[in-house]
Structures are given as C-alpha cells and as structure tokens.
Image 1 (tube, helix red, strand yellow):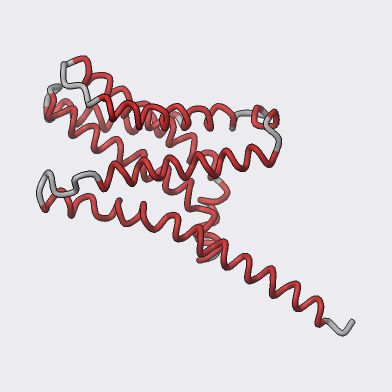
Image 2 (tube, helix red, strand yellow):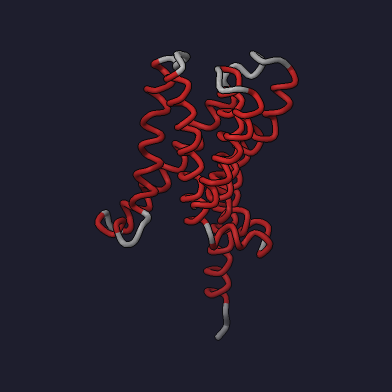
Length: 199
C-alpha cells in the first residue's frame, strides 16, 4: 500500500519536474498516475478469474487481492492530489467530472476502509459480498468511461497508447463471466458424477 503510493508519487514528481507544473505537465501526470492505479485495480479485480481460467500461475494475484485493492486506493490518492492541483492552478475539470467520479472515489475509499480488520462484519457476509461486487464493477465502469471518452481527441497515437488499457477494461468482466461459467460447469459435473457413482 505504502509502496504503491510512494511509486506513484515518485512518478508524478518526475513527470512534473520534466514537463512543468502547469496544465500540460499536470495532465501528463494525471494520465500516468491513472494508468498505474488502473493496473493495480485490474489485478485485484481479475486475479480470481485468471486463476480459475488459467491455473496456479495467477494464484498470487488471487491470494493478494485485498492488498492489490488497497494499493490501488493508495495510488489513486496521488491522482486525486493532481486533480486538486489542476483546480488550484485554475484549470478545474467540468462539474460533470466531479459529479461522476467523486462518488466513485468515495466508494473506493469506503471499500478500502471496510476491508481493514473486521469492520466489514457489521454488514454481514452477504451484504459485504454484494457491496464489493457492485463497488468493483462501478469502479471498472468508471475506468472504462474515462478510457472510452473521446478516444480520438488527442490523435491516433493517443488512441494506440490507450488501446491496451481499454482492451483490459473490456476483458475484465468477460474473464469474470467465463470463470463463473467454468465453475458452474464443474459444479454440475461433480454433482452428476456423484449421482452416477455406483458406490
């Protein structure tokens, strides 16, 4: 968690030192820190599905899903700090950006807070699971909306640069669906095998 925050902060500092502290440098920093946060989130979101579909090679992602989620929340702090700086220098995003992404950020830190200790037990296992599932998908949708918004407004190179992240965002729920389908088939097969067992 601290490592993710420190790494993204260092990245932002290098970008600002290189490109300046104005609108351009801050925008470059926003793009870069958002992509780092996305990679951490994607790993937390998709780790379980990747393990189900492709085996033990991805098991560390599944085992450290909580830590990756907290690392995402920590890295996102740097991105939000750059948004604050953009507002401070007089180039604030539109109100629509805050109305959409503000609640998503609040949801992110609500999930992070509830994951500490036994705080989530006050919700009960079913409600906590539902909140996590809905919350993670809302965050994924926010990333996808950001990635897909006016993809050509900075030219073809920008589109190509963002294509891997957009592909990952689209693939993530499909991986979840495929993993769920595979687990369901395996459950049915095991039940059928049990019924057919002559013992």
